Length: 152
Image (cartoon, rainbow, N blue to C red; front, side, top):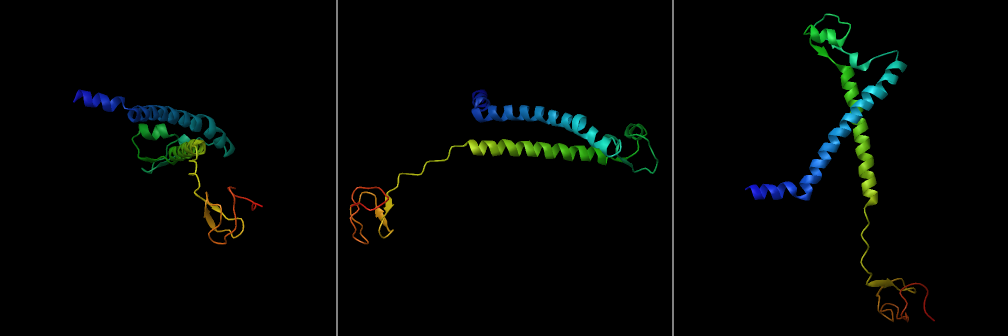
């Protein structure tokens, strides 16, 4: 059983997945910091010195100046500012993933089409086997050319 687990754990797919999860978690922290520390303060300043982390509605009917005061008092709150931060984080992560997938798709090599077995007759435009020297449809002489102008 240990041998099977070891084979499973060191298989390439499992290691790739583990690396992806660790990098994804670190990327998530970077995006959270970007939103909370870089993007939201200027947006809040433009909107009249609003701190999105402090945007909440007290559901108890009592008014509190800060979210920390409301939590210390044990009041239920609706924290829509935190929700806005989380939505912005999601949009940034989704856009970053879109860019990575788009780049990966562009980097994939396109499969080469198989060698053609047919060619077009330059006279009647019908399909002709590539090794044919005469078109079976119009009986024109094709010579050994692959395609293009008629041979003379």
